Image 1 (cartoon, rainbow, N blue to C red):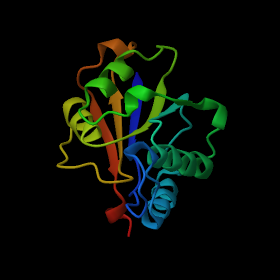
Image 2 (image 1 turned 180 degrees about the vertical axis):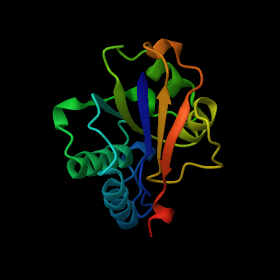
Image 3 (image 1 turned 45 degrees about the vertical axis):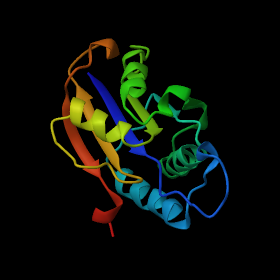
Image 4 (image 1 turned 30 degrees about the horizontal axis):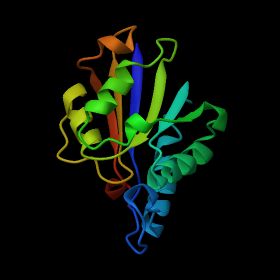
Length: 161
């Protein structure tokens, strides 16, 4: 059994003239990170590994949730493949994970996360919003064999306000 938790980065700020990778979170993005972490805390077991896109907004969202959920920072690794907007690199990355990992948390971007959630999950969503979380479970021992699983749940900030 494998579990994949997808969390899209929080709302980004457009106040600064910086590259896409360097765009920071807005204040709402920070607040939504704390809100989603509080909702996940009672039900989410500590993952075996955490991977984040190297984009500033994804990594900042990641560190907020890791701190709030009590996930040790030594489980975090940056993954350039998660700076993906089409879903192909995200799927390839997940299928290449070490089979010793049972529960993995990844932070990244749309449209990739919406596409992956719909392709691999059992519940459709029109959009994984900023700071949205989708938990997927797969009845397989090997990440490379993932095709379709079960959506365990979706946590979106707008449902928590």
